[in-house]
Image (cartoon, rainbow, N blue to C red; front, side, top):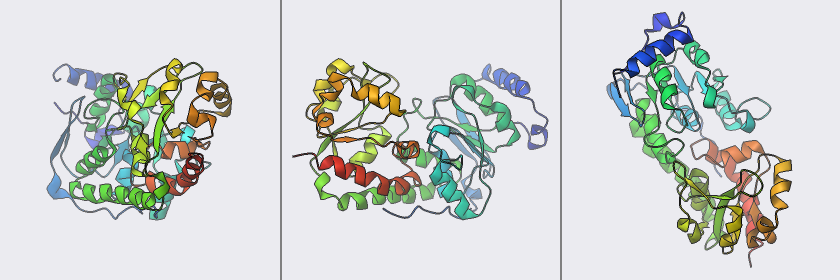
Length: 346
């Protein structure tokens, strides 16, 4: 059962009122140029539209004008479709000196319009900030919002969550969901094709990548080791640049609810056939701790310098998300790092 506060009342709402209403509702229901944002188009004929998710239904009755996004990737797709969100979840770790993710700042600045207001997300979403933004729709198809958070959010505006599991929506599926929610489903194929073309054109300039295998690994501290699975977005991006996921990755059992597998540092030798290793570090101190581990340092690709690991947080963020804004922004920054690692392979 959808619930939405009339616009005239939203200014006076307190968070407690939203929570109360939402809980009551829950009891009765179960190398390219970065594309500039397109001019907003009328899509009245696309509404009403209902979008199902793992957490509930979002019934959008008319063209959303005030859009709020949670998680990652949805803001970029909305901008590419011509709708600059009024509010977005902040991501300080990946932001630059502007306080925004640089590709979002650049794209919105090109439109000449105001930048979205940023608010705290994650485990402690600033619900009051979202209420003040008076959204027509809340987009969170690639996020980790909980059932409890969804109950509150859907009491503020129709909320589009993930179709299956948190943080597991495929990049092209996310574009399709956002386009449908904004009344522009026909534009999704064009955006998807554009992303593929950007990566495919880059791959065509790097024939030396063909036949080279890689593993994309991560750690949560000394003694740990995990591997991202092929469908995970950062792995998919590297694959579309022409490299091949090491077949051994398919042998590792996926950790429930993720697109990755925790294999433990004791199994580091299983990555011996990976020509390259892709990874990232949260900070320089952590990097030194990880690289000092004997089992980690003994991985052949690591030992000979075949590691691709950016040290800029904006780069790490952009190379982890596939969408119409991140891909053109990151390609020219990515290729030199990969070239250097590929050169170590004999």
